[in-house]
Length: 165
Image (cartoon, rainbow, N blue to C red; front, side, top):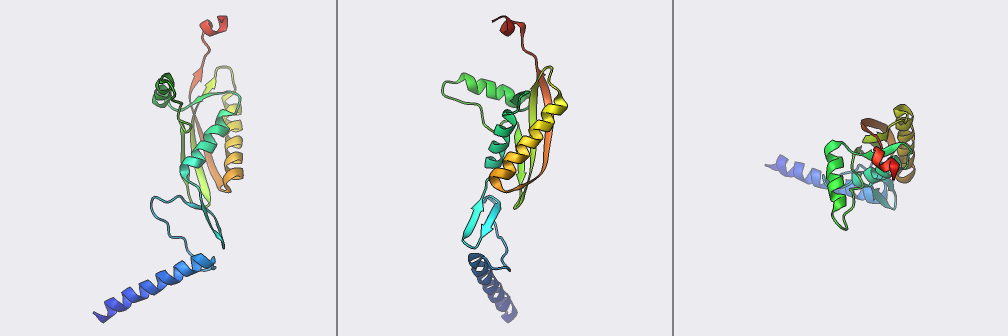
């Protein structure tokens, strides 16, 4: 009985010490995260900055869409849902369609699903997307981007009706 109380008291003292170390920014600090909390990207003696995975996904999506040759993003079903949403007045396409991310404390891995224009070099477009996404995410968040995986799901061919207009 006494050893159980001693163990609980020891854990309580260690938890208190860990909280104090984190508050002081001590070298022995460790990060305890709630499961729903965003990972820690920046930790200083004055506090922590947490960046949600959705923020990283949005940065990646915007950076990818800026590249010439990218027609749209998302797999077939996601694109169809986006098209349906665009028909609803006031609705917009989800900013992170076609993007999935895994974010750790200091690193991020990003998966993108793209549709390119017919006639564009898929290799050149995917390389440009990879460079742009990694640069924007690293520059804006301070996270190291360890992988940007690009999957080209389709190519867009402009119809002759649109060419005549």
